[in-house]
Image (cartoon, rainbow, N blue to C red; front, side, top):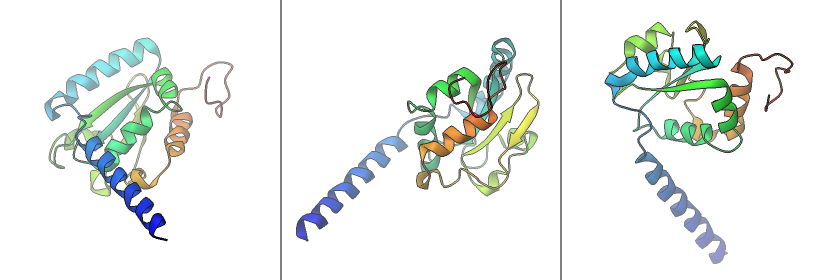
Length: 165
């Protein structure tokens, strides 16, 4: 019984250390860069026929850190890179880029991370309205896979449920 308690304690300490390290990662650029990043993404998306994925959050947000890890895990990264131009929009301490969030109908009061999907021409296709990824720490990477597959652009000869198409 004592061994089990020690193993559980060690696992919790390891998890806490991993979470602390991930919070030090700077995912979101300075808030003032959002408009330029969005403009560049619109140009890239139009020429590469990919959708734009807006990720609203902050470097202080643990759930945002987890979402970024899930975006870049081996199951999701190929889907993300082939189908989306990712734009990380820094919301500061819920006081920056609020106009961009409103423009794309993302209610930040419901929590972050919050996502919006735009067509290759910048038309809003989807925005999270209910804080769907706000509890990302309690979700699996497969939730991100499902989201990416659902919102990737249709390609000739591909089924909507095909992950690697």
